[in-house]
Length: 404
View 1: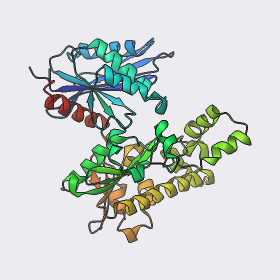
View 2 (view 1 turned 90 degrees about the horizontal axis):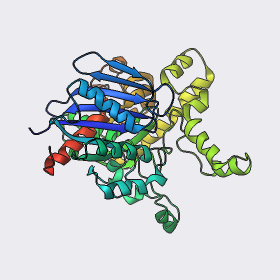
View 3 (view 1 turned 180 degrees about the horizontal axis):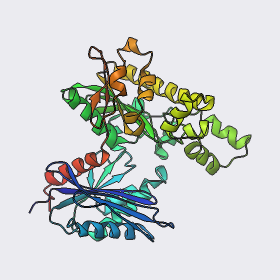
View 4 (view 1 turned 90 degrees about the vertical axis):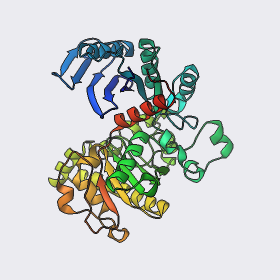
């Protein structure tokens, strides 16, 4: 029997998120999470589509044990890794550099290249590699596909991707803007076009992926032409714990005057900055509660967040020239009406506005929140990175004749 299911794995440094998707109808026979791998209090949460959710607590020393525990739970539901329905395993890989511009079937050479990219993704690529190697050991006969966060952004022109530093130095150390959240930006830009009843090739979209990590992209006719994250996910918008755009000289100042080490500054900018650095909270719901209660520090953090967001919307409007839609996605983008309203306030001259009533309505599906006569559509589009990874994985193995 030809398999129609794809297992999507997202391997982090201490966790593995997984979803089993059936490409016939987009259903999810099972989803789960193994967290605190290698730590005390490891936990596995497993939710089959048919049956009760289960939770296991106990030692999970490494990713090999995590994936074996996942496989055992799937097997209990008749969904084991040896099932003939399983067509492939799709892996989220954060950094693909310039070589990987599309999903790729993993072999030893691909693994070696992902490993070579560790210096530009030291927090992510090692964990992604571990997940791939473990899955290959469990099912060596099954196609393993790497889907890269950076791939969608490789269509950026050099004028957007290059930093204005010495070219030889940049090339020697692979310094350029790569961008991240690519699977989300690809999915949301395409779904926005569908919501408008138009082909992706005919639509220009500004996508705002606003979660704890946040990024913006300018998508012209289905192709990314600019994005806010750069060499790493630190550049761009104000995020939950990351600073986003900062004068590089701040680093030298902290070294020379503050006596801080490179590692200390790295921790400061990635883990102690952004919203949590500004007001002590990185949960937008709590920040809004504090703003409504008159908390001045939270109000300033919110204003800084919105100011940066509005700057990127304006910049990407200029880059695209014509904008058909602005799409909000991810945790904050999908759920925070005040953020959406504030981000577009004052931009009516650009044809951007939200309808207060539509914006206030909560919903699970893609929807328009702009006035009916708006020149530019404003949409809320729930992202689905797992579906995007599964779709790209299945299309690749199907087209290459590698279906089991």
